[in-house]
Image 1: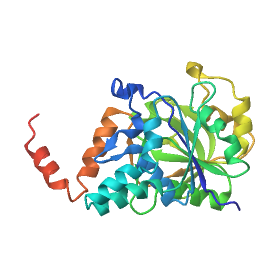
Image 2 (image 1 turned 180 degrees about the vertical axis):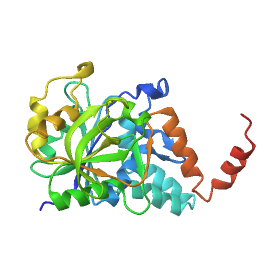
Image 3 (image 1 turned 120 degrees about the vertical axis):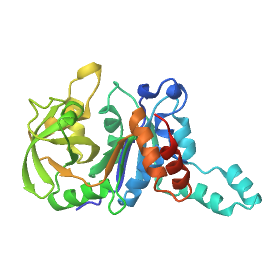
Length: 289
């Protein structure tokens, strides 16, 4: 069995939910306390055994490349200032993985960046993670949980979470059959059906373990809603040819591409840090609504 060591992270989107901020600044570089969202995503991948990070970029995304590059001028300045701990932390970011950058080419949509990485992936199974979907689990990263299921069954694996009625309006909902604890075989995915038409209360999120046959499906998939190429459309087409699985993952999810999700992540992580917890607690305690 081939080890999963490559992850595609699409980061070419416009980040319209954060305009005008994202006119010149990538949404993936929005900070959670003092670290950009994209670094959390990369660290999750690395902690799950990923060695090659493929970042599919677009216009105004240079800051992401700079963040994961060596900045020798900054490192030398920190060294001269005696800030060796901070210098080492900055250097460590560039050492996280082997970073590969490609520009997105083709129709807009989240299927295009995956297809753009076809030659780099080759014949290996691989991961796809969205650059603003933050999923935290201190014991076992979400991606590692997905890889464990893939290693057992050798079939593509989608992230799944338990949702309420409101969640059926926000997520794709899985119609599937439970084959073991927290693992489902997918029959179909119904996109945002609402509580009355939802086949279950199991929703899908944006992290996947995929196999190379997804590329053929992407090449044949028609442009869909909004004039975009959708990865989920190709995944649904693939499900007609082979088994697809969904794994209920444990952890806390933040949609940091939304204002509320980003604020929640900052508050929650700030309450877990020794250097910020006291001041944040005092502020929340005294805030007047």
